[in-house]
Amino acid sequence: ALLESNGGLLYNNEMHTTLNDLQLLPGQTYEGGLFGNIYFPPGQPYNQSPWFYQGQEGQSLDSGGDVNLGDANYPGNAVDWILISLRTGSTAESEVCKFAALVTKNGEVIFTEPLDCPNLSNEFYLVIEHRNHLITMSPNLVSVDNSSSINFDFTENQSFQDFFGLGVGQKLITTNNGDSKYIMFAGNADQQSTDSADTDINVNDKILWEAQNNQFPVYGLGDFDLSGDTNVNDKLIWEKSNNNFSSVPR
Image 1 (cartoon, rainbow, N blue to C red):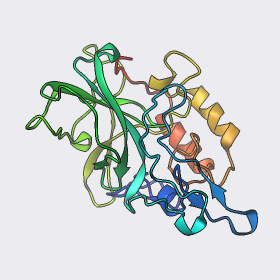
Image 2: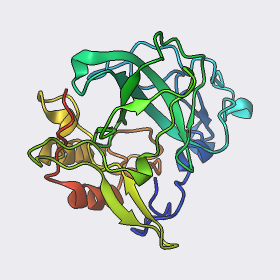
Image 3: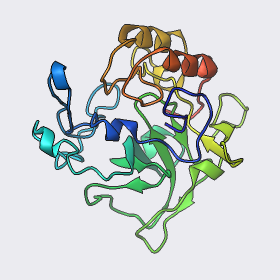
Image 4: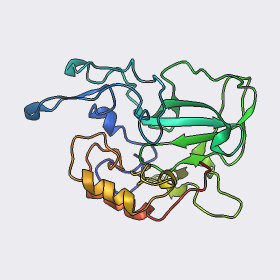
């Protein structure tokens, strides 16, 4: 979503909010004119394979299928849902909390529900997952401020990479105003066909894109630029990300 929303391949300084603007996020209603309105059921999108996260975040953001309430009270700067995990160690077995949240166009995170995460007096690795991006994790433990908040800027810090230099972290890009940012690799549509699918961008992701190509409007895994339209622009993103894999432990 940091790419130009008109299909261009230049990076903006802020992400576009096209899914939100079109009212394609979970709980919103897309006004379809001659083709009818489309209602997207509410709730965070990570309650399915491979995440199986059963949190109730997003249930209150619901238009009920009423196009007059189509934005479902989403914040206007919301881009999409992400899944956040806290780990006391680098491996998935050390996970102590997980929650879905909204990421905004400037990269900040909005929590739609109060967090229920005990023992926030420790240090944690922060893990970020997205429906069609490569998983990322803070390279080091991050301290909790005053036992209540955690502050970490992924755009200024490269993601975790193992000690052998295997795998990628994040992609370093330059925005159209000259700023350098680390961003997540897009193109990871298939995160469940194999044990390593969620940490690897390969031909299986292209196959999933092909199955969804030319679909609009859609809140789909093959829509790598989050435009609501799965098309050749998404394939171009996959081509730039293909053969990259993450060493974040699963």
